[in-house]
Amino acid sequence: MRKVVLGKTRIEVSVIGMGGHEYLPDGRSRGFNEDRDKSLTPGCLFEGFGGENRQLVLRAAYELGLNFFDVTQDSEKEALGRNLKLLPPPYEVFIQTRPERMAYGYDKFNARMADLTQLRAEVQRINTLMGIERLDFLNIPPLRWAFDHDPDYLDKVGHNIATLKKEGLIRFAAADTFSGADIYRKMIESGHFDVIYINFNFGDHTPGDVVIPLARAKGLGVIVREAFMKGDLFKMAKKAGVDAGRVAEAAIRWALSRPVDTVLYGTGKAHHLLDVCKAAERPFGPEDEATLETIRQTAMFKKYEQRRIEEFKGQADRMDLLDYSDCS
Image (tube, rainbow, N blue to C red; front, side, top):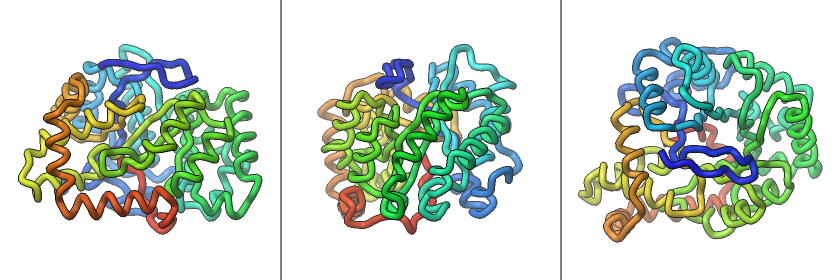
């Protein structure tokens, strides 16, 4: 798997990163779709995470050379930490995760991430849960309400990030939000972050106009998610009468043809991971563009695109939508 230097971090990461979700038989991600409150409660673990099938996916990731792993809820964190000890990677890997019950709309005004004592305790808890001494990437995902409520919010978060780095608890910090371009811009320009973590696909393309170029100009790495639009892409493909595999390949290559470093991909099947990594080896071409253009003509795509444009430009804040964890 091809690797690139991730912005000013100077580390090399695979252009396909591995999401930590495990899946129900109907394709929905486990945890949040089983018991939402439990999945958000620190220390509450679901049974069966990190089992034989997940280990097969992890082995495939090693064979393919993937070295960037993202996990969200505690069940995923614990399972990855356990499996990395059971199946030690043959090379250095990098882990990203978020503080539990502090992100997005899970904590009023995201106040706990601005409190050093609480954030430090959460990072220490995460590191203990995963059996690691230092977290590679701490994902900091506030919403607009944090900034509106506290004009000094970013300065407080920046102080916390610097302190956690100095104390050896984290290596890097990722800027993340679902409150649109203006909040991303503030986080990027603050100088507190090393990378951005952002939704980006050919239907949710507005970040490519200003935010991603700004991150590049400031030396930040760019990690993107939702290449397959949380599975909506395959519903669009069915409507358009286009082969799902062909659409998936085109979507992956579209994302990698833009100024991004790593595209996160979540799957419960090792052979799907292999297919995606093979697709990433080829450049985006005219056939891919024709495939995506067919998808663009569907009513479902047009509705999806318009909604994403409005959300990212800040015309509609998604503070009421709480599950943003899918990396597929």
